[in-house]
Image (cartoon, rainbow over all chains, first blue to last red):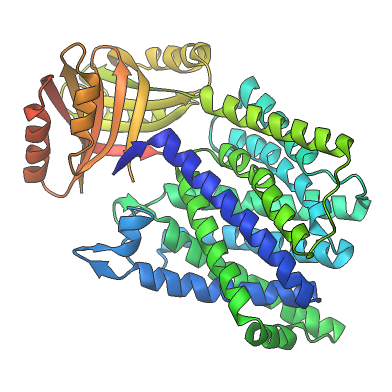
Length: 412
Length: 79
């Protein structure tokens, strides 16, 4: 089945958000019974590890020459596999990011008990991502990207504001200095992993997620061992007890987390990390019906019907949607077909083309043309000023043709 | 794995029908409708040259396709 690339991206990112919203509801229910947040977090991690491995094994089952995972979730997936040497560095960094993010989240839980007061601010992570991408992805952020990121961020903050909520400076510091940088580290390196070629095929999101959980769990366990050793606490043994006591609910949370991440990583392979994050921040919209249901069943305090709060929340949601739509509508893609004069080495020209900002893919081909270059830009002016003029100035280029992409489908 | 771009010229007014048929063909990883000298750019991923020939053949059999040019990928750098 082929689906428009843009729709596939939104389908994946929104599915991931909906699952995260459902898990957050489940976390609230579990939090009623498991009072120690560190134990709670660790036991969720065990389930994450267990379900990731079991699901990856299940998705590896082959049926008529294709595995279940390849047919249903990610066409790049074949079966569960060991890490390649070249992936190790990125997995260590992404795993460290996940561990830092998770520990920061637990720390917040211990500190303020109610993560819903702080989590909206973690949406600011997209601003970090726009800056990081401009450095490592050789793509200067445009005004539209900066504007949209700011709009989505402000919308996310307003959309989930709590009028009675107070916030401490310490919590802010944890969000901005620990949780968000951890999330950035994880997103950026998971995207790097998704973009890698393994045995000449795209890397798959299912194995990336499984190995990310393995590394993150390992790093977190090491931290908890040291924490228990120095403070004399017994978080580790308590977490094992919780693992047995709340098997059912924790399994659901583990399965949900696995699929939300697999969808998120696949979306990361299509869109930039900042845009994926912007779409994912819609979790705040999807969490509203979950909150209403939780309040109805008495798990959280009744939702305020204060008109001021409602106006603020609705304004936030509208801002978020506007930001996301402006991200979606302003991406311009094009192919540039290039013919070369004889006597210029292919490798050198390829590198020169690759060094141009906005160039996503450089392909050396045999046929009428010598190179096919794929570009992504936010404005045609930028496409001309920063890309086409630079291509025209490369020595040895005889002729080039710009073909704007009007619509695109991708096999899923 | 062999990858190739197939550049397609089609008859005016046949874009939707050609796209519908292209979406049914196996081994096509991506279909881009473009504005310029060509009308559609397709990216094909196949295991053998024989299969590339079959894919090209299927594309040429589609009503509305006037001409195809196949560009086999020799080397690639991408994000």
